[in-house]
Image (cartoon, rainbow, N blue to C red; front, side, top):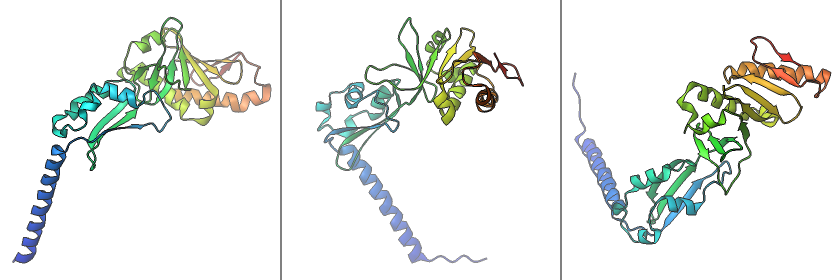
Length: 254
């Protein structure tokens, strides 16, 4: 079997590769050699969370911005600064790079709170979308599901709910509630006792919903939906004081 080579074509391809490599190398050299013109902070805030502002990000960088202007980019330890910024619990991710004009871009993504931990004997906290436990902010209050009860001390002692099975199940329940239009509007608060048993407080109605442990969330919420769709329309919204979802295959209303 004979293989034919087109020498001219192969040489053209090789030349093109050399040009591309040369351009990349030149560009990388120019980027490291560039002087910083200005610093621009871009906060990804698509969920309208205003926990941090531009000034807060600049403070987290722990650098004098005036001194940065005119400095060579190669003199700035971008990765180390990114790590400093990401230590803040409100920040999910931070990235730094320069644009073609020589501006140092600091792009920050904020964590989205999905529940607020409330207590009477100390500061509150938030639970982030990824399970991170965050402090509250004086600048912004998020309208989210409330978490109360003796279990909140346990929640506030961890930095992320994903570190244990019970925390993961609670996070799944919170996300299930907020991702469902009806539950997000109806369930206002989860009161959790020291043993981890949940009582739900509804927006509409006087009943207290005994949910039990946060496991089997989908099964329990299906039973609760039957209560709201099939039982309450027949007897009225103020008929029952307590609904128990803990028993398997049963819905107990008193």
